Length: 142
Image (cartoon, rainbow, N blue to C red; front, side, top):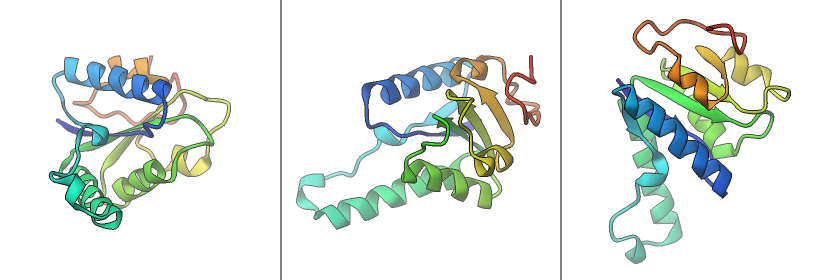
């Protein structure tokens, strides 16, 4: 299965979360698109606006090409790019699997707009991507 891994990557903790999630998903045999691993060729020859447009196209294409989106979600805070990825995936008919690592602060739009809502990144180890069960309450799948 092709999975797009949506997450902010602005600090060491967020980057560590991405690496952990990608490791789990790849160990389960999935192909994982990690946006922070993709950049534009000849970046130095582009203006910031040109670079941004190319990154947008790459990331949107990653969502268009995937079977499901895994969203790493820190609760009420989600950076605007990650929130856009989640909404676009939902509107495109993709199944969105949310891994929430701040369960006390969730947003109803994220919870109700996802296919499965998991309590933490390690829950990806247990989630059955073949059957894709609907999970609305974190911890429900165990």
